[in-house]
Length: 324
Image 1 (tube, helix red, strand yellow):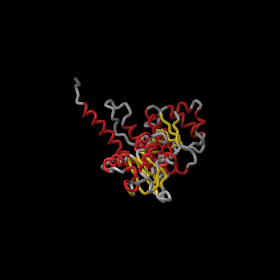
Image 2: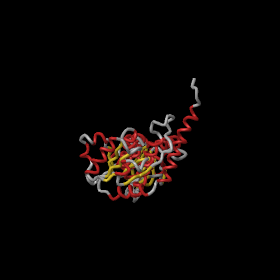
Image 3: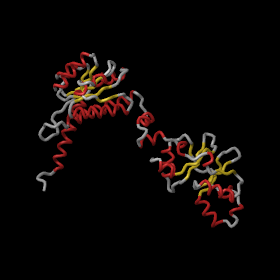
Image 4: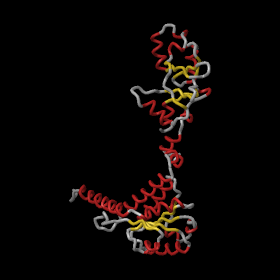
């Protein structure tokens, strides 16, 4: 059995980290503005660096920046001193994270960066530290106390660093006019990338795969087309290829019970006129929403162009297979 109620202990961590964030927000000023302006004006990349837990946060900041339109890379300070300094070019900007700003590794690193005239943005809780004094720009943060019960493990400090990094990325997203389509291009293999990049035209069945007949066609021929194409429907077109209607497998089953002369009737008698359709250039995720978000789902959807000419057919099954 536990000797303590764990929820108050967890709540104390929340309060201390929130306190640090609120205190830092109050001092976030010219240093943050100058850092953003410097990054915007730079022709190079942002190189994030840090030791220990600050290094892990620096790695995350680099990943967030690089995925949202700001070229960034993480370089470990120790590795930098043993051959990786060549990664940092004169036009680059170093974003260096250190709560104390006084570690031996940071001191040595700053000497080399100053020698090479690399611009440094310091993210530190001590502006008066060696790092704070040597950096070109300082973004200060405040940690009244660490959330660790022993006051030793960095918790509140790393949370504040993480949030400042997120704030920098968010501001740069706005200033770079970075759009969801841009984000998708940076994440083509992810779910979000698929949802934003895949168009209806990428998944539709067109040309010989499209079950298409014209107005006046007998149901005998239409059924042959439906069976051969196996799309669950047949589309009916006018003389210029415009969409007139659709007959689905369900429509056909109901018609068998209703008409004794089904095979000799024309498709015009059975089709659903002016059916719901979608443009081929629309994102595929919009097609999924159109087919699913209704009282009765649509299993197949005619695909048209801006002139309402039939360009293909899209199945709900195709969207599911695409992982949308």
